[in-house]
Image (cartoon, rainbow, N blue to C red; front, top):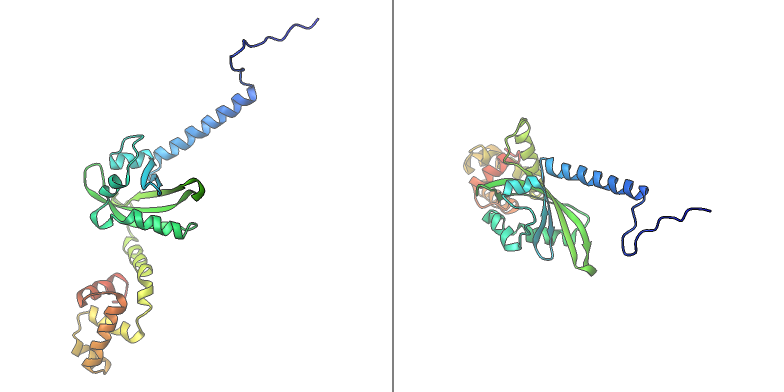
Length: 236
């Protein structure tokens, strides 16, 4: 006669099977592995709820940089107050951009206040993490680099900055004619309008008209800003 199987007392959960235990241990290892990555990576990770305009999660490196405690959800006013005054519309711009460009990334350079109360430079790439309008879900994951850290290898920094500026300003730069580029080069090197007119065989009136058109096309206010623009964008 076969022995009766041992039965669990009623109301108690069944003992997990070996297969379930293995699966659980595998999940726990993966969680620990990803937690270590999130904690050790030299970048900030943050998730925003863009409907409520609040930060709902951040990894340890970013919390330490900004002086945030675990489990704290920052509302829109608290987040905005941490941005430099010139950058306090950034979250609104991010939300507007990602609503219209859901498959693209929003990128930004900006200043944010750190744990010491100083404004430091950050660079963020943000993409939609979860989006479901029917469930009122609009979450964005941002990967943030602290640009105020000292560079170990900064040889190409000037070239990088110049190329980025040129790409950002390319639309406006492409609006100016070859003749206007010549005039920009002369202006940025300190030549006066009369000197430029003599060099190019143009009247002073014509050179002045070119100057006005250049400022309008490049969205600049004066010759000083034009000289800076030319140097930053390789037009000098």
